[in-house]
Length: 228
Image (tube, rainbow, N blue to C red; front, side, top):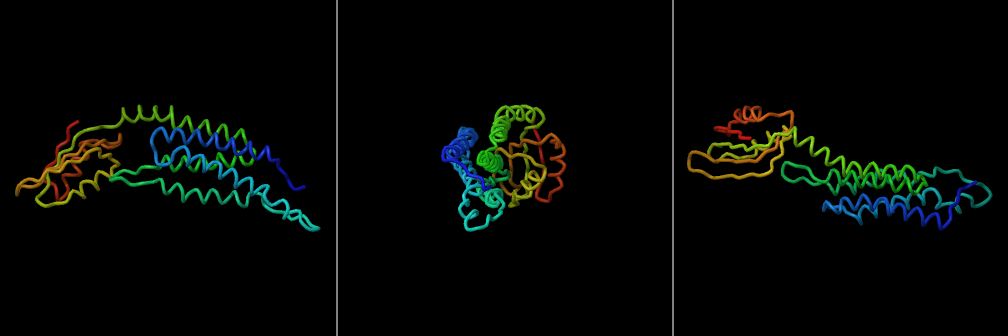
């Protein structure tokens, strides 16, 4: 027998999908991210609607005529997983040495999963998934920030460059060691060279001494100083 669904159940699933995805979007909106409340809600509702269409939208065709056609009810919903990747990629941006938007892109991806779960009538999974996501974006974020802040080393890096030498090799070395550059100041000197000042946050696995040694080996660098 081909499954069917009432108008009331369709409305309920779409409303639940909007509410759960909206909770995730509200957190992103509060942090002023590129994808906020409306974007997450649209992704959640769209995923739920695609799932409903995939499962229930072709009943007349499947039971039309004298034969019942067997079909995979997930044939359309399965494409959401692929399609949401293009939307998430648009939220990822590179700013200097840092990558921003990965969490927002992952949020859009998981909101699509929540919408699919609601569209399939799997309310328990959708509710639990939303709870885990909100915990990860809230309390877990604060705990992570506290732990990481205690393990990272922040300091000021002063680099003397040879005349007319670029700063790109210095930045590339820091990027390779996953250092976060918070501020850059470059002063043009006389014929003796250029002075580069950077405020840097190093990961726990990298020490200031290691950075100084690595920078000292660059041909563009005359001297390096690290102050915590």
